[in-house]
Image (cartoon, rainbow, N blue to C red; front, side, top):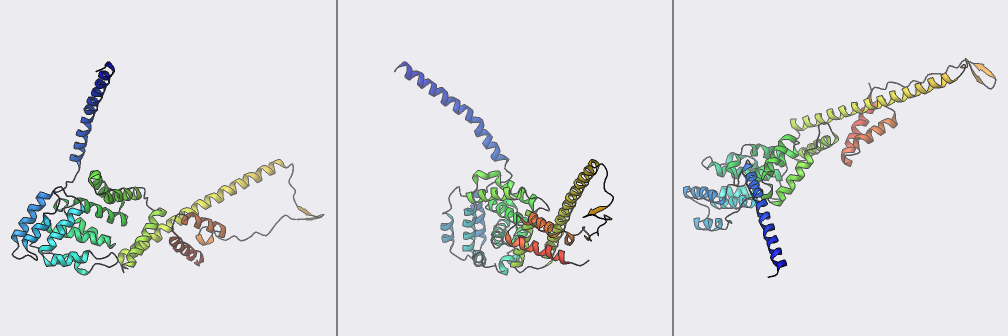
Length: 360
């Protein structure tokens, strides 16, 4: 073996040893990060033990036990995530006709609203173990979220212990969706951050959507155009669902209050601009007067003399939206609605036009 070959081999060996050495802390750090997560995957074996205990306690099963066991054995040994939850729900449906009927209703297309049996959980059997009830509640809440019933879904999610479900990621993901659509910014960020503690283990659609939701709601500010637009969108959602109660009325009033606040702010800005322009004009007139040796006492028009008085034009009050000049009203409307979708612009413009036509 040549000297060059020996030297090359030695350098390669040293480089490989250094790579392994510097990789050790990274593996340890990754392990520490995983331990720091506030939630854990339940694992197939513990769920299997719970399922077998439940099936053993049943006097009657909707399908033969051998058929149920054969189906459950198809679950991969390291299965986790929403697919694992669906496997468990399908297995439970094979054991009980009521569960089969309810879970079938939950799988209807999103255009069909879930029936009362899906939204009213009074049918849940109190004799069922807690883990079974929690997973069924999770399935119901997920379906409600699919049908845009975020308030109802969130109430169900809040009552579920994350340690009792087969898929904690589905619980956190759909809970985050509800917070996001209901503009509950802090709760949304807290839930999504908890979900993303195991980002590299999530199914891609959960991880990607969670990142998008987090980046979308994080910059949301109170009384902003973005917030008003989202409030309007939520009112439309509720009205489409046939809701017109106190929550909707309160939201509509909140939108009006925020618009009033925005109008007042714009009026203040316009008034300041007017004052600044008037001050500049006064300063300019003052400089011109200082440059004149002696101002003329009377005006002269083609050899005639007369007093320099002119009729003062009545400009009216300037402290209300309807009193603003048309050009300034148009400019203010453009500033307010420039970032909103067209249907929201129409609503806001109609609101401002109504203000402009109000009589004192």
